[in-house]
Image 1 (cartoon, rainbow, N blue to C red):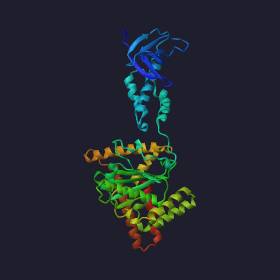
Image 2: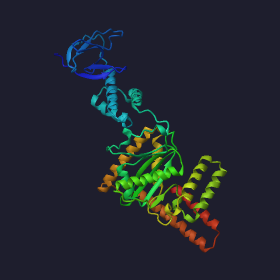
Image 3: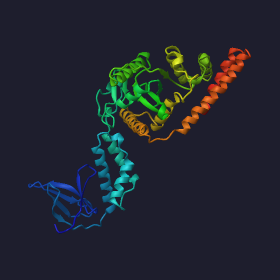
Image 4: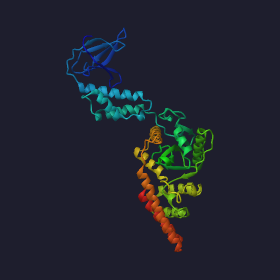
Length: 420
């Protein structure tokens, strides 16, 4: 061919191959000839213009013949729309995990390559979203439907992410997270969130640890629980410890301190049960039924089943306690305006693990900054607790009634809620 023709490959709305010439004209596949060459006719062929232009390509997409007798104006915008949609769809098709695809950044990249004539993002957003949804895996609706193997069970570094699954529990912990669980086991922070748990489950349970020399918190596991039975939680921690021991040549790992919900770990443990009763009475009066269920769970789990001393910080305030987990929970809750699907949640947890991994790698190499705000917050809490300790000592010296001291620490809890 003497003409200097530029060929782009796209597809029609029906998903059939489409040829674009010089970013001006579109040709849909018409038929295949005996020599395996393909004939493409101008998209205006069946429209009012009845355009008779066509192009013939061999199996290497080389031009054998081109009839350029178009009887209609060029349509660069319509052509650019087809090219843009095709390139984004192609990017989606090549991705094994479509949740990780960010359509807008992909659009921005392609639009720069295409030049000045480019469709607006809003003009293609809905069509691309439909195509992306078709690529997503079938939603899991019951615990029994959770697969034992999946491409989603690998970290972005290709390591195993899912370590255990039974009919009530599925646990995710990467080798990196197991290393943190093993090496920083003086303090393990735990908390659960109900808001991002898939509809078929009860709770997403998170464990975190504190790397003191880096002044940073890191997540050490995620788990999806079907119920709130004590046996489920017991199994969870047994599997986490077993996995950490396995990764550490079977040297036995036992977390020394287990911290949990709210700001109660800062309060004098002698009065925590009394404060729990005050909180419960207040919520009974206000008929907060859902929170009462949560209080009952807290009572059974942390006031009865666990020794209070192992999660209380009253005499050892070095860093903010379970708000480390709660801040992550709040972040996760904000990511999902509605309950996520199983795979959507796992993809996001995988992404968080990956970001955490590189944050840790940078910090141990010295490429990091001290989190002054976190340090200031810990100092602020420490000052507050010390002030209440002083008031408590004065009340004891004055031989005040026990109820006065209980109310004092309840006021402290209120102040903590205001600053954390």
